[in-house]
Length: 370
Image (cartoon, rainbow, N blue to C red; front, side):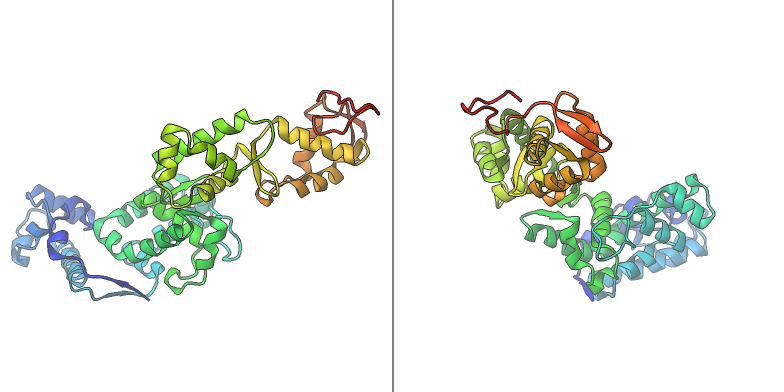
């Protein structure tokens, strides 16, 4: 059970009324009456609130409930059985269901995939239009961004943030599954929760399949320089070599120095980047000709020709698990490089000429150009 530590009264009193978390009607009435902060609101007696134009008893009950919740926060007496229960305090059932489906909170706890449903698919389930589902998502997210909702959700956000920082400030969806059975998360998919809180609060970032507490500007400087380095090499390079080179490159060196483990950070960034390939070791390279060279070497080792499925198995033996290809993707590589491979019969391809990984073509040791 999560525990919300006390929040000083002066902190809550400084919350702007428009961000505090009151119902829209009550908020609009108070703003028109010149009430700008929670501290100002606390000075009003119930009869004074009812004297505000168009503020009725429903809005008064909303304000009183809000006051009770803030008093609990000040006393530090808030025990939170699960994140889902907290969501239920601020969202109606439709908003909760939409957010659960849109952010993949109901995915399998053993599958790192974040199973997000489209607005259209959710609308079909609930018998609502796509636009109505979009409005529910927007309204629900805005409710969870209010000051009071954020205060109640803070223990769960902190726990997820701590999990990221324990992994050198980079956490993949697969690594997050260790939190799947934490009772605080009510069997919600941890990566889905990370995705939701990243969008709501910006305390951490979702980028190319991982979550990080590294500032986006720092991350992009490191990432751009790594890609530039990879475009300059002619063979796969290990992360430790790339990180070492990065430490000699001005802004990228300063950015890398901000991280507790630069080599691990470089490896994590590269393993998730869609424009980077990785061998089994792993060593990294930009996608393109080197991958074709590796495929050509695979076909050469299979006697100069191979069924595309066999070539797929052999190629994947050389690639990192995060970068392995399906047989359809390898077939496209074979068919899409006519200068390297030619189709000799159904599903079989042969080398047109050896690539740079090939063995000498003559007894004298000469090497044909790839």
